[in-house]
Length: 207
Image (tube, rainbow, N blue to C red):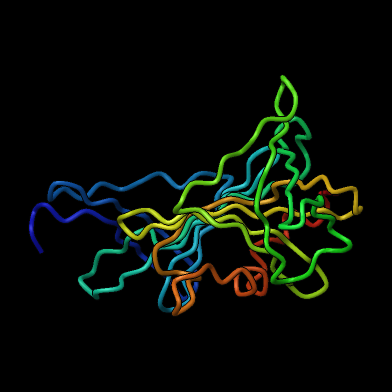
């Protein structure tokens, strides 16, 4: 292990994480575990959940190359609805020019445009060549997933929900990943994220 290695080490007791250490430039330093954090170990990965006003942050740490250092492989921020001012509202346009409606859209519908509500009203949220917007069915929910893939392979993503069918979509989660919850074809596994219970914090949000 070279002095340039960066990452994390953890002391565990069964499924509990008892201490967190960060290594950088060959030095290992213990990190303080905050009172609003919970840490767990499933035998392979370490998961950290931090609860703040209006949101829950979830991070997964993985030792993919088995060198003893864990790297952050997944990060997700989920809104709880406690802070309504922090909620972001969007409109999405379908290929036929109509507005995407949460009660009517189906998986596979093509989303071709987006608007974001700001202080000055609605503004176009331009989609770049490395971005895509998909309609995804997750159980009884129909969600919109926006992804952006960087040159390094990192995928940034946002999840939107329109519960009341008013064509106004609330951003309920956003995050980034490289390999965790990524399908073999390189796309975000939103169903897997939902099935793991990672979107539950947003259940009370009315999109």
